[in-house]
Image 1: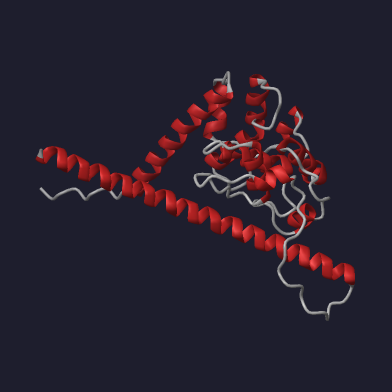
Image 2: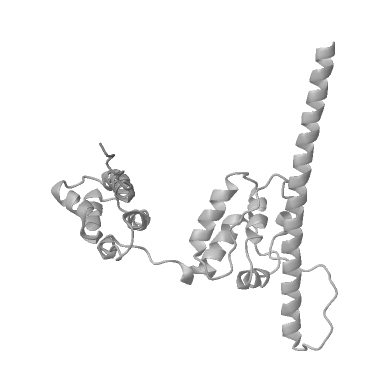
Length: 256
């Protein structure tokens, strides 16, 4: 009986802790939505003041205002466990990169189409938020429509696509470590639509500075960029060990 009582107490304590975590998450989400709503209210208020053209007039009192979302989206509730997306968009970033980051973070909590619309709205700030509030009332009905309009609005910010021969222009800078150059070169590879391993290895050999590592690539040509990475890791580790050995001072020979 005592054991059963202890188990009940432990279960009750666990349930209380879980409810506390849910409450904290809900409060944080509400604070985030209140912040976004306040920004929207201020943006619309400033827009109305500019239209009137009377800057000396007293600010309008807080009131309800039209929204670009449909009534169905407006009536939806964002669950307390929805992850707050930490990827702000101010109007100068790449829209497709922003959408990718948004989708990646939303995978953690998921949500309905309406939830996606509301959470995505919360990532907009600055001129991007001004654009959003300028849209016609009840115009947005789905996230697909919202995201398409968003990309079209900021398509000029999209980074130009990388073509294969651009890889041969990626060169290691003087003073740049092999590790940094390897990472910078690899970041360009992931942007390419085609995966031509032979071209990757030739471009890397051309771009890396002359030295022991580039000479090893000439003596034994790598088949893939993954092989270059493995050999580079081994080379960096060996150089680090050699550098450490050089820094050690040999002990003096003891007198006989």
